[in-house]
Amino acid sequence: MDVTWLYRIKLAVLSIGIFMLIDVYTFWGLRAALRKSSRWQKWVAYGLHWAVMVGTVSAALWYCLADPLNFQSVWREWILGIAGIIYLSKIVAIPFLIADDARRIYLRLARLFKRREKEAPAQTDVNTLTRSEFLSKAAVVAGAIPFTTLSFGILSGAHDYRVLRRTIVLPNLPPALDGLRIGQISDIHSGTLFNRTAIQGGVDLLMNEKPDIIFFTGDLINYYSREVRHYLPLFATLRAPLGVYSITGNHDYGDYNWWPSREAQLADFELLKAAHKTMGFDLLLNTNRILRIHGEPVAIIGVENWSARRTHNYGRMDLAAQNTDDAAIRLLLSHDPSHWDAEVRKLYRSIEVTFAGHTHGFQFGVEAGDLRWSPAQYMFKQWEDLYHEDGQYIYVNRGFGCIGYPGRVGILPELTVIELKRG
Image 1 (spheres, rainbow, N blue to C red):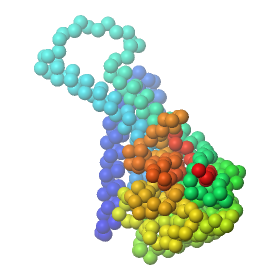
Image 2 (image 1 turned 180 degrees about the horizontal axis):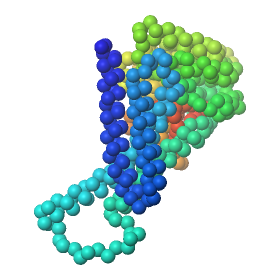
Image 3 (image 1 turned 135 degrees about the vertical axis):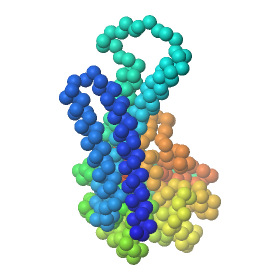
Image 4 (image 1 turned 90 degrees about the horizontal axis):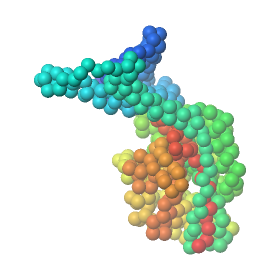
């Protein structure tokens, strides 16, 4: 048995073991919560509970042991998303069940050692909740909150596209470039998309803004190039007078898959590059384009995925930025925003604006006025929107699609329009 198969078997056993432990433990809480329910209500609830476990175990076996090259990646994302919602909800409920178990263990120990004071027989109403029933029902309510919220995030949030407009003021911007409008789309993740009509609506939102140039900042797919085939004509409608320029993201290389050979992985990457060409995207792989805009040279620099968090990087800024010193302005496309602090700001001070994506804002958070919070901020210093340091800017797009969880809560999918203004 090779190492890959051994890893997949271990992953399946570990996943199934965790799921079964969670299900068995939460079942006892469900029983307590339904103690006063009718028999048919109990059996319906019990049947759904165990059916979910059987379905999840089957999905885990399929996910871990199926031939990955024949695996429909769109189903993989939905399996992950739905299982994640269900088991996250159960995990949220577990502290209440633990509190109830701890209470009962304490009472039993108190009786055993005769430390509990004698109490008069309680005169309780038949309809009054015991502490145990209260905690069990509280567990159900607590679990229902993330379940309802995350389910709504799939049905409503996944395709609730918004156009965000920002202005960047550059003191060295030539007058001829004042007012240049840049459209940005990032992290399409076509393997998770599921509502073609809504997706077309998102593309139309960007086109209605009439940008002069469009940037796509990586992650066209989740795992395999075939995921985007169905959407090629749709994204080919992205057009701008000065062109559409694109780069690759971490998911575009197939590094998260099991391949029969390195040659198979490289062949799939060639298909991905062909998809960019079919859509009319000018894919920049560690290279640049010098555009003449009203007579002014503008460098569009595209670097392959480079991350401060990954050991396997493809980006070569030395190649991407060469021969751009004479440009009036330099615009960098770099998928992972950690690249900005780690290399761009240190070694490439002449790059005025960087366009990134990658974080998705974790697809979960709060944005209300000046309040912005997401778990993403604990992993990325620049995790969404516009940042400015020492004369250089980076814009981190919240992403167009989803990965893992096929929805969004609070952090909605985004199309960006950035206008450059002369200071």
